[in-house]
Every structure is written in structure tokens, then in C-alpha cells.
Image (tube, rainbow, N blue to C red):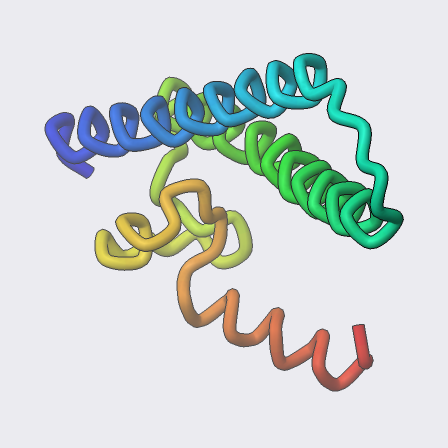
Length: 120
């Protein structure tokens, strides 16, 4: 892969990471500042449901942060864009769609088929 492509993906991954961290900070601020008391139990339940949903999203993003950091490490190690299953190059369009991916489209499709058969 050319150095300009690697630079593009490094910037893309850094941007994703910064967006996630910014959202996390905003969530923390919102939850610490909102000392709202709801008189109506339905309003309180809705607020709690919204808070739980937001926390689930942030937990998923926390896991994504690890994947992004590993992708940046692969760029630095010269292993970015190489399928960890078969060793072939991962296509640029696939990397643009999911820059933290570790599998080429063929290996990912096979993995998903295997999971469907096992019922995962």
C-alpha cells in the first residue's frame, strides 16, 4: 500500500477516535450536569431508558476504540491492509468502509457463514 493511502487511513482512524472521545466527554458532562427531577413516573422512565441506551452506545464505542488503536498500530507496524486470516491484501474500498477491519471480504464472508451455521 502506498504511503499516501496509509496516511489517509491514519487520518481517518484518528478522526474516528477523536469523534468517539468527544461524544464520551459530552455524555459524561450531560450525565453529571443533569440533576433533573421528574414528577411524572413516565417521564422518569423515559429518561432512564434514554440514559441506558446512551450508555450502551458508549460501551460499544469503547470497544471500537480498541479496534481503532489496533488498526493504527498495524499502520505503524506495516501490517495494515493485510488480511490476518489468509494474508492477502484487503481491498481499498473495504478499508474505506471499515478501516479497522482485519479480514478481507472473502474471509469475512466465510467467517459470517460459519457463525450462521453454528448459530452464534
